[in-house]
Length: 211
Image 1 (cartoon, rainbow, N blue to C red):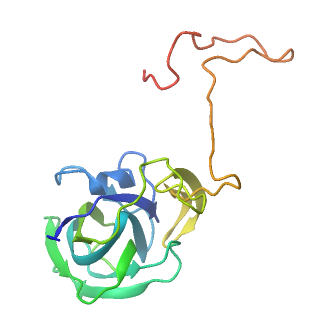
Image 2 (cartoon, rainbow, N blue to C red):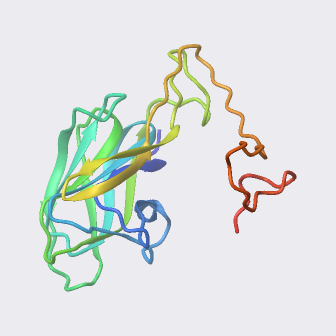
């Protein structure tokens, strides 16, 4: 199969800035970015849409000095091995572009970028792109496999990451005993007897409307 960009999602980032969220790193273009807010090292973890033999990781950043890229072939992001490492030149605020070769790696489910040091107190990552050969297709988003595991199901994770403290938002695989889940979100809810009166959402409105 030809090598091509592998679809990814940000599972975890060790720093959180609401103005520059971690999802910006996988958007197209270099104008948006994620920024570190703590000491080094910093970590960014990606979950691949499908297990892949990763060939290259393309990185667009500022103020990164030493780094390494790690991969995990397991279904849980626990045991990582180093795929490649390197050091970037000080571009004095200009974008650093790097294409990292990752030869002879196993089928990879997770990629972790570990920023070991920087040229300044803070660094930015504008773009991470993973290229490789997909070796297995996953079930549709929200569907459960034969073990009752939902592929690419989002959840909120809180904890402490390297170089910073705060909520680590990411993606976890959700397990159910029955092998299927039916989640229904009501459009409106009657107030409890002890609940104060307050403006409520219209019963005919969508719970996902913005603004």
